[in-house]
Image (cartoon, rainbow, N blue to C red; front, side, top):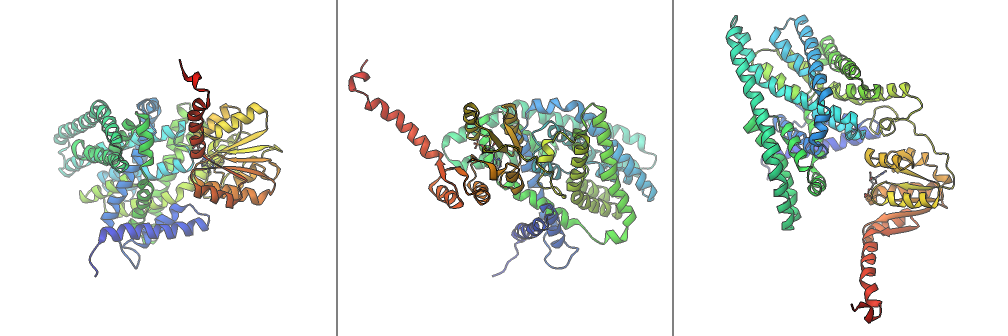
Length: 568
Ligand code: AMP
């Protein structure tokens, strides 16, 4: 019984091949996204074998963009957004102008018309949301100042592209009707005004109406007690606002989803719940890379090698230099400028839309689209290297200070930055500085016991640093991080993280390195208790059991008192 199921074939083919190629890339010590892109090339029309549905893959990738931007919105407040506008707005505008000018220059050299050059240049100027967000997330930079600037910058680029998408057809008419540019000027101004008006109307509707309505809907759903309905309501808000923004206000999906997330984040409980209910996000982000790979036609490398090199130079070198110079000119530090330059030195989904539009309007030749598609995949492949170069530059700039970004780099193409091994001996190691680990460390501090903290997220790490704890930033399950904590010389290890699988990895490695070490781990179920003990923990504390005992203690104490003490 075989019937045509292109959607299922595309999703399953994409996820399975991405997994296989991603795992191979990981084994070869390459970033997994290289594997995802190659999976796309393998299932694309330009290589033999299984060919998935290209347009379905692109739509699925859009879902990834929506969910990612929604997730970023959850960590952003309007205040954050406004606080970076002074750099993000001029930065993005100048960078777009520089990249477009370079693109026009190359197009004219290749003998294309000016209109085609503008579309080509604009396509090279705008970075991919998915690539940028994934790069920042992997390096735990999203919630830092640098990360906020990069996200603000991305949003300005996004807005600029919304304008470009409506202006290009109008411009095409002006270019098409030779000498009719003056006729077109009025129409262009009107189109521009209407588009800006729509964007402003969308923002106003979200800030006034959405702000009241969305948290209320979620609070109401939470009160129904149905977890399924709650998850559904979060997805419905994210996807519904994104689609509404696109259809009613001509704003991009990404921008719509970002605003939905930002508004939801204003109520703290829905924020946390919403975050937990976004497991689909990563799967769709992977499909984004697969869909980019599918567009790639490897023969372009042979057909137009020099043109391709020039295109890549604009994306990687031209844009980076422009971003670096602008950020420095605004008085930001070198690491900030380098991170922003690296994060924006790639192109993606918007570029494909622009390329398609330019081709459909007859502004740009087919070769323009081919160069944009090839430029996208190669610049995305190069992106981890760009980050590695930026990190190396940062280390050179400040050899004594280990920036968090450098210590936390997990997915770079080259070996990650070395961690400074602790000089402590006979010390305790606390893994995780959240609700549990921070209390354990506070107790150790009070008792004067030497200890160090391992934490992998920037925010809790900053709290640990402010509390004066010796700190290693990184994932404790990574051998190099644990080694830097001097397991051999430690006396106690407190594994205070909630994910038992990762905790088990930490415990196993620690037990292997030091048979005498007293290992205390955190668990949430009987199965986790026995798993962690099998891994080598001496003691396992199940949070829920301790809470129950504390509750019971409160109930039993009054009853155990003499009856008359309960009387008024
Ligand atoms: P909580 O559940 O509030 O006690 O928080 C747990 C803390 O552990 C969070 O701050 C996490 O960032 C941190 N954490 C979770 N997994 C790891 C890991 N593998 N390595 C280091 N820190 C971790």
